[in-house]
Length: 219
Image (cartoon, rainbow, N blue to C red; front, side, top):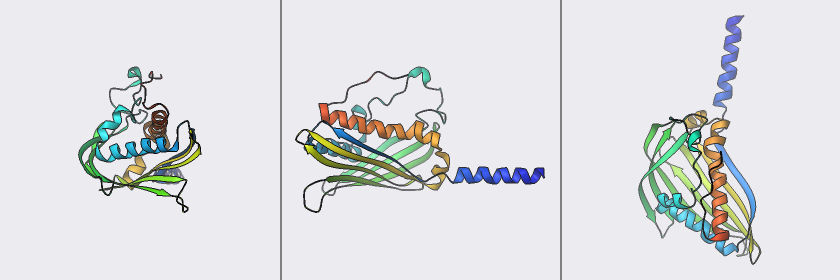
């Protein structure tokens, strides 16, 4: 009886772990106090820097990502915001076809799990069938190796009037099967999801004000 119970518990535990989704997304809708042309310029600047010079994003798109120093553990844990980290390396960008390739190392809990993985991206802007709105600015990504199977960043922009834009935002990742097992709901929320939300907030602020300001670190 005890052996049967242990076997049953093991099966239930295994099923719960390996049933973790490979595809995870953040989907948001918002109104921006800026013309649609300005919001599109901000989105395209983000895409360009992501593809050609990703280190530049730390000056505005990735601003205010730090957590309070007193809450930073000596080593990353599953509870920390830096449980998963990327280190950017070589970059190749084609301005004609709007394609990019960035070599990255991925660290999980402070340990490099994957080295020299390649993140390939392509950006496309499409319009509604009548040639007007909405505009869909879509950057898709593919990865070498088994870290990730792909990713998408989508902005659907539609003017409300001359000074306001309706924005639909999607940021999704399809994890490789090995990494998907590691990415629990808590890790997704603590280490990844909030970053996608913050990216949207910073882009909106940039479109509305022309810059992204440094915010006090919230405890």
